[in-house]
Length: 133
Image (cartoon, rainbow, N blue to C red; front, side, top):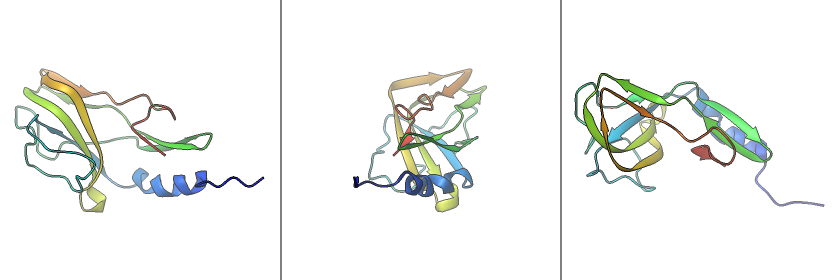
């Protein structure tokens, strides 16, 4: 039997550079316009507030995982401490690739941050990880 498919090893190869590149997550207000067509990090409508620095924070412990034929990326939740701001979503982007975008997050409603704020990512699994192919 021959099954037409994209191979799991190719999926791993596509995502592998994320483990050595520098990924960051930036936070945005509800006025931001971010979607699948967003190609690079922008400061337009990025959060401004106590304890937040433009450009956001580093994503850490980026790893590539497989489960069956699904390849997915996992990384740690990102936390800001001693902050005061309101945000609606986030943009994950790759500073090693000229700030090219990776993913857009919509928190569903405005979130009031303070004194701490954590972006809790979906479970690191083949069925729910934020990035999976």
